[in-house]
Length: 401
Image 1: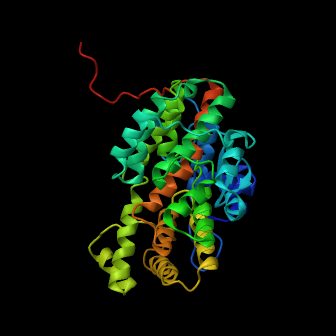
Image 2: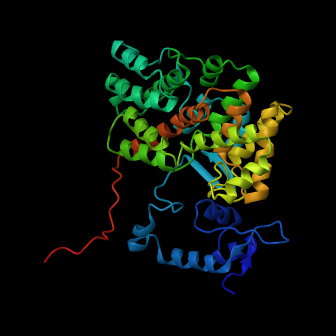
Image 3: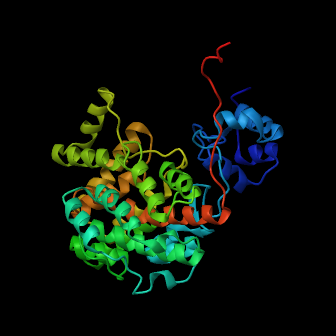
């Protein structure tokens, strides 16, 4: 039967690959896994396995790839930075969930940028001269992401060292940009202090809160070729400086289908907290066909490992906090009603809610954490020294005679 469900072992055997490769195909969107009633293991449709076999035999060239190269899921470029496979996330082979428990964001930057701590020397700070100071003051009333969008272009124009193509110089620029973005979010002068401690000071957090913020940013440091990373990488491929590449990433992140989703999740949290009846809130949304944000991710069919990790850390650190109970109850109710587990947008908004962070803090942590990943993509692209320039498959009217 065309829709026969195969076990993972059967599917891997038909494709002639290992189980790990099969899970990698799922994480990259090449095939899907399906729940099967009465069985814990997910199955694989035989027709989808057959279609993937045909695709692999036909190769990755020509019109077939051109037609779908920019669609969600199909690999577009080679990268040694991040792997999403088997419902896990790895930075250069290191388990991101494990790193979230111990590593600082600077340590993850050193891993992704392939360098030691030198870029984070105490004297490698952005210079805040009169022009940048004026922009800083003008941007102060804006939300954190918009502050960075306003400040980074001016900082780039005033940072001649950022135009150096030397790999070590690029890494030093990346460190300055991470510190500049942190300072913009925190509303404080640039500092060599670890990023999570700067935010903890600005947001008046204790050591527990600081550790949770650190973990969240580590989990969001990179996520392969999402829209913002790809935008940053395209700009980096033109030879523009790192500031310009990061501005491209920020612009993409500002969209409501990317980083802007956190605002919609925050509204859901506020509605659930005010109503007191979580299931009633979700049921009302379902009846009105209102999107319930913060649940499900196409790259994690069994649940977003970033959310799983961050919510586990939150439960361990603050198990009796009313906000923790609200977050876990909301996640559980959504799982029952819509069958999708929470994603990283939900988890970071839960952290914002529990710690009493300022509005937009979930997205601010995303901005700072992902600055590390955007920089890593720019560094990797600079090393290739190739312009990213896809061709169009023309679908308009034929040329006039």
